[in-house]
Image (cartoon, rainbow, N blue to C red; front, side):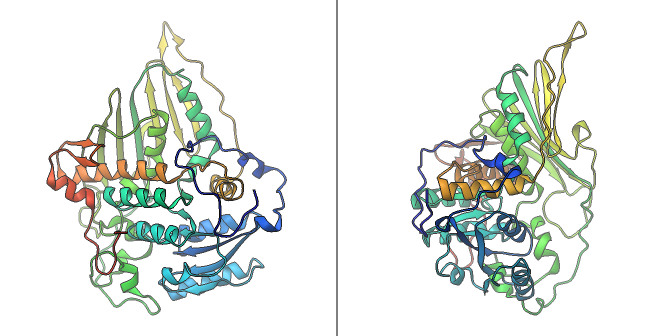
Length: 439
């Protein structure tokens, strides 16, 4: 279907979320040259980390052009715009305010690669401007914000892909098909984990003036006002509650997503969590470096654990999902998947498959899927519902950790049962004026 700027087909609220993505396998073969009407122009908000990785991925696909970039760090912004120009494209227009970028003419979609606490506002501003969105994970920095973003996007009819790129990975799709085949037998427990040996202590640093060229007040945005501290800026923002949820949401949304998908699960009935800063008790970070969470569903439990400074996680893998069934256990991570058979009379209870190997980038497949959704109305691999679902479940783990007790979730009311303190954590931090999610 030819692409008409800002008049794409509206996303059907009843469209199924597919984990087998049509057309993506063609990335390894000849590249179709888009017709002039299929040319896609996009802008990027937040260009230092994944925002720029996503930009490069989109530019690897034919018929795409980055026309505008926005960042609060002028030095980063100029460098990234120049790097885009080095690819042979025109240098993108640059903006310090995301609202100005959203007014850039003749633009089809926007990438949002900012810290987590900005995702809801910018996503809703973008769809209000008539743009489709590719937003980094997690979708929001609290359960309440995630619901607000979900509702706003569905009301807008725009297409929103969340950057959970594992959804577009062929070996992840194969692994889910095997889980769904029933070969593992009754699955009573699913383990999920992220052990991150590369993470070392975040050294305490004093507050200081913001670097030249950084609009720090705009970086804070809806978060509370506080002096600039280099530990809270750029990459390390992940370990401070004002801006993110630590490993529980940073890695959890990738890993928990496949536990939920494999089990065709909705929201848990209850959650409890425990942990703390056990590895580096005196470093600068706020979020726990060690955490275990237990999510209760009707007929199985899902376990999450993370640890920094350690690589030897379950099954000697730094991260992964393990579906533990009566006939065997299936373990999947970014490197592939395997099945460990249970035995009876020394005979395996499940045939162990030989997983296929794949080449290419799952991130590139994910951005290709988004372009196919714009050009051909193909199903999104990780649409707003997928992003909202797993972000909310991951945040439940953090809420239970903060509350220090078992919590019971009621999906009908979108709240924890009779627990005002937990529901205050559900809602997240109060936004700093003038920023709001009220529409």
